[in-house]
Image (cartoon, rainbow, N blue to C red; front, side, top):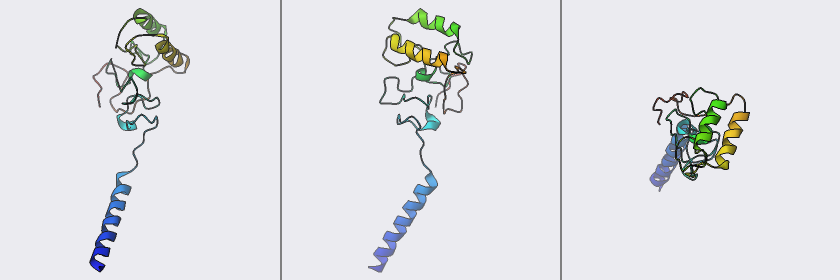
Length: 139
């Protein structure tokens, strides 16, 4: 009996120690993707959303939070021109911020939100390789 109790206490202590050493997994936006692997850590774009971590230009910033289409690290009128060129099309490219497959007013709303917010840069991204330039940044 004492052996079983000692074994049970030992297993409990070991499990508790391992969980404390592992640390907490942080998921700021609640999209089921831990921040360190999340290419859009402030806005949900995980497996339960249509965007599902899509990063069409491979710059390390998910389409959901990257309206910097020319990779200048700022959302400007040049990016607006790129958006207008694809508006109304069935395009799964980088201007499809909501992942619907069609560039609509919903995507325009996301674009305006980033255009108006200072500094207008893409992100934030938890990926170490995120640079804002098309450099094949994948987790």
